[in-house]
Length: 433
Image (cartoon, rainbow, N blue to C red):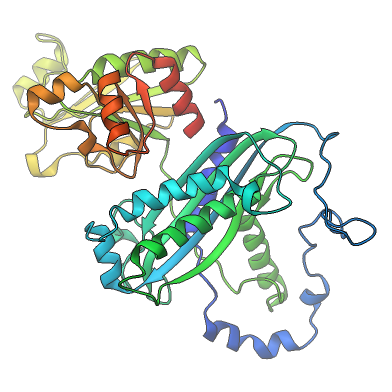
């Protein structure tokens, strides 16, 4: 699958970011005596991350300089960084309920994170200007203290060990170039947190920005660096030696389970053109060599999927509540359910283990990464605005030119793509993956 290694890196970093917790003060205190004494594990402390011991931004005379990268090869590079801003629960509720006087806090913070990625060289003196190819800023509210992992709402970060709430920021930056992009990712995470502080400081000056750090990088001569892998290695060292290395965390929270396969939902109002666009996208992704699955949410009661008078149709007519059909090259099943027992989309998606991506039609409120399909004429007929469907999971608007102008005039930062340009939409999907 195209760019699959970058998708895997992003997923791994997301899982690490959502599940890793700071070492508590009590845990540090409990290990203080042990770390004060020389141990076998301390003698075999993991090697430093640096490839060499000298500072590349300082010359032989001790003068600062920008590193000459003229002779370095261009490679695809990616960096993922995180940051967290902690706040009073009432402040978090104010943001989530869109009651901040300055406007939509999270939308503004996402834009700030992306802008910071693009302008890092303007504020970090020795950073090279880069032609950014990917910039993404995700912000998730942190669940309240004591919330079990299984009860954490979709799109939220798990509860912290210290019980504090706020927002977790995850930034991904990519470039094809001669130098790394770690500083851009870190600057984006910092800027998003700072923007949240700025927009909420009138009601909560005690907010605290913590844990701004690199989670993952790859590309260039140094290859892959992954914080989760280093933490896992440290835990193995603890298990082997019985004492934690001074530089290693005491424990690592288990990673949250990843979805079986990436899924992109195409959402929009009836007659907006979802099915036509989904058909084109499936065909184009298949042409590019991806194995594509699809899922359609039927918003009405009941549907017929079998062929009348065929054997399985007769089984169903006779009273079978769960019908299956298997041959050498295909299998199918369908079942009757009560309205309140509708099959969860993610449960069905867990069976899609033979494809690279699933294209979903529908499910406006399920929290899937989505592309909003819209036409201004349909909005006028329905008396609704498709822009109301745009949320934190929206990757782009697939729309006509008139609606793209409306989105721009309304200040939406979401990218708008011509609804008839299936290739551009597929480019976006592959970049996202």
